[in-house]
Every structure is written in C-alpha cells, then in structure tokens.
Image (spheres, rainbow, N blue to C red):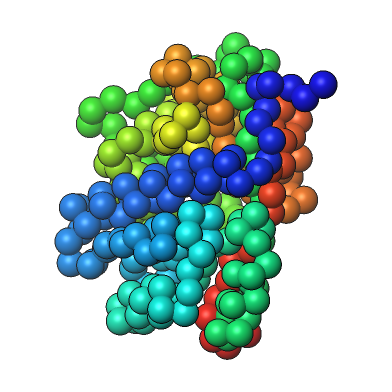
Length: 273
C-alpha cells in the first residue's frame, strides 16, 4: 500500500516543490534589492516560471519551474533570455524532468546544453530523526543576523576558503529574507553549525546547511534537521524538501533520514558548452 505521508512524485508534487524553492529564492532576491539596491537584483514571472537576477555569477541567477505551469514557446523563452542578457548575465534554467521532453527539445534547438544536475528529495515533517541531546538548536532572534552569517560562512572555510566572503554576504541576506527562518546549533554554548528553513505551499525548504570543520561528526546537522522539521510541522506544513548532488554524501544522509528522491533536475545553460 502507498504511504499516505509520501505523495506520488508527479506533476502536482513537482509544482509544489519547485514553486516553494522559486518563491524562497525570489524572497532572497527581494532582500538583496532592499539591502544592496545598487546590485540591481530583481525577478519576473514568465510562463509560470520565476526568472531571477541576483547578480552576475550568483547561483540564484536562473529560472525555477520552467515548463511545469505553462508550456513556454519561443516568444516566452526570448523574453526570459533578454531579462538575463540585458543585465550581463548568462542564461540558466533549472528544469524538472516532469516538465516533459518537448521543453528539452526546444531548449536544445535554441542552443542550450546541460550544465549540472541536482536531486530533489522530500519527506514528511512529522517524526523525529534521533538527534543527539548534547547539541542545542535555536531559532535566531533579532540582532543575530551577523552571528548566523559568520557561522554559516565559516563552515565553508576548509573546503572553499575563497568562498567565505561571498558566503558571508549570502548569509547576511538570507538572515534578512522574509519567510526564511535561521537556525544555529550549539555545543557547550558555542555556535558550530547553521541552516535555514523557508515555508511554502505546505512545503518546507531546507537549505543553507554548514558546519564548522572542528565540530563535524558530532550530530549538529542532524539536530538542525530535527529542529527544522519540528518547526515546520508545528506550523501546519506537512512536507519538507531539499536538494543535493546526485549520489553525494548529502543525498545518502538525507535518504537515511527518511527522504525520498522526487526527481533529478538538469540545469540548462544557453550558449557555449
């Protein structure tokens, strides 16, 4: 018998998941526009998809939901492409396979090629994950945006030290994004890990996870996961989602905690391969 807590991975679910991520990222773009107006951050909705400009080279400068709500024709794609190119940005679309082969053929015909993949996973928010009691997790309060951002950025220092300043700015904007809740995990009263949660149409988007290198393998991310699932469930949000690289340790860890794969998206890039 199908588990009623897990909806089928169909068009209806894909629309809910992609719209949740799209709206969360659009809120982030709005926050950047408010905090850094000179950056020119903005977004538009075309053929049901959200096209976002968060700055040249930003991972959020792309579309979400293309082909899931309306079938875009050449005119709609031209409008989206102009939105990016007029701002000096490359054109990227994050596309669910549930959008169908007709869209993929149209993208190929227009000169797009696949750039990268991401697996979208989901699970019910109800039920714990067995977090360790020695890790304390709290929802950050007013005046703690810099603390959260510094903790989140420092989690990248060992793998990608060149990204720390970039991640610090992203973290400061995330902490000021409407609808995004920021969480800190603490060991002995010291912040050691960070993560975010954004609530959508009955879906909680889990993102922004990072842990200080010296505090890894002590259960901080598991505690953050449990706290965010509980936070979402208490607010009447029955489903959680996240994205990970296919076959990665993040995907395996998510599956160990009850997440199921909904589909694997392809990011399409216009122009040179």
